[in-house]
Length: 222
Image 1: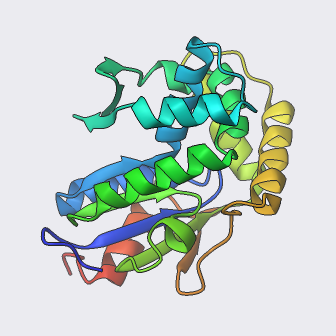
Image 2: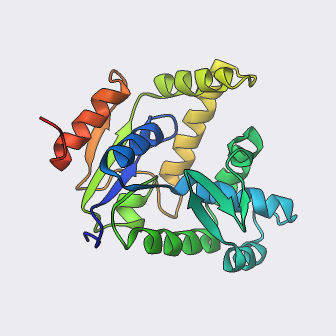
């Protein structure tokens, strides 16, 4: 499925696994575009909330998805020309996104858009169903994971560093709940593709994970 401008790389994994940071690093080192599909679902969730569309209103969500314009510009996500990069990273957006992203009209629309974004190649696309559903013919697939405890600790530290309130036990509990919902949902359940390279980051730092992936791609400097 190699595009005209380079490889198409699928990066999947649960929340807090480090896949976002790793994906950004890989994209930067290869000169590829980084696409955060989770941010796209968050953007739809935030916009639907602004418009008063309920998370279970499939007709309203479908109309929104037919009209919405989502772009990644200089590492930020814009929706209908508005930069929503900060607004989609709030606890409210966390809860809304979990509900909205499971709706069929939203998934259909976003998957179609994600495939169009990837078609040109030179893309590192990160999410939960990239290698299994969105880009099953991707040139390379990776599934980044870690223990719920470690992922919770990472998310907890991240929130504290931003000056946000955070309770470690609650964060870990929320991650376990999200894992269960994502793995058991009817549409695009969270699971590694059969041909994905699984990388457990529990005892690895970002540099080690990035080096492992670059070697797998034959793009390391050694």
